[in-house]
Structures are given as structure tokens and as C-alpha cells.
Figure 1 (cartoon, rainbow, N blue to C red):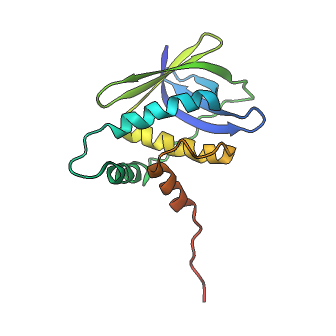
Figure 2 (cartoon, rainbow, N blue to C red):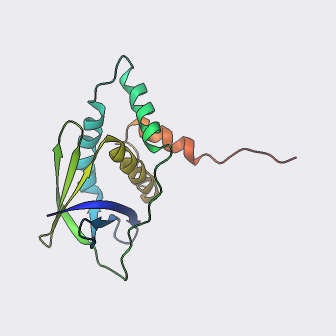
Figure 3 (cartoon, rainbow, N blue to C red):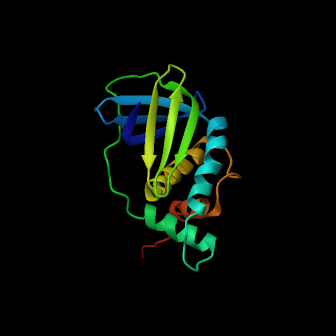
Length: 166
């Protein structure tokens, strides 16, 4: 089992799946896809982990909104993980979630027997979820599952500038 150091996601329209390309600790790249159905089972656990954090005297919705903005405001630019040629992604059959106080790990088990782990702290998870939500919209999979603190931020960032030239 290897840990993923950096991950790139995209939507496979033909397969109606999300594809993940991960750079592993040893420098190799793993490519796998996840179905909507499996993500629908996973996401509520991730939202719950973020929402259970202690947060002073702020209402939970306000805290989540502020924390999401802070985590995704100016993310560190990183090079996308790309394979050197066409690669068939392995299909993920199971995702195990391990929760610790300040770390959440996703263990992806694939049909071909491989297993990789994506460890994330809260800010990393928030960035990952915001990127996944963008792809989710691209896939037109509906928004009913997503919390407002992710949806609202995406709506704000996708509104075109209304600057007028005179």
C-alpha cells in the first residue's frame, strides 16, 4: 500500500466517472476511476468529519463557510499529475475512511487488487472537495448532497466579472 503525495482529478464523460491520477511516494503514478454511486456513499462521511470540528462561539454554518473560504482562497499551485501516455484507469471497488483528530485518510481498493491511500488534513480535504464539486457540476450529477458552504463558494467564484469599460 502506497500513499498518494499529489492528486489530479478529471471527469470521464464517456464512462460517467471521476478519474484520479496520483503521484505516489516512490515517484510512480497510479490512475483510477470512481463511480458516482461510490462517491455518494463516501461524501457524507467527509462532510461530517469537517463539521464535527470545534469552533469557538460561531454558528456551524458560518464557521464552515469561513473555513472553506480560508482553505481554498489561495491554494498552492502544483503541477498536474499526468501519465506519459494513454492509461486505462483501475476501477475502485471500495473506499475505506480512517479518521483521526486532525487527519483523514481515504484508502482506495481497486478491482485489480491494488490499494493506495490519500491522507488529508482538514484544509487539504476542503480543497479536494471544492475541486471535486467543480467536476461534479461539470458531470451534471446534481447538487442535493453538497452542503451550502461548498455550493455557495462555487457560485460566487463562477460569477463573471461585471466590470464595464467606458
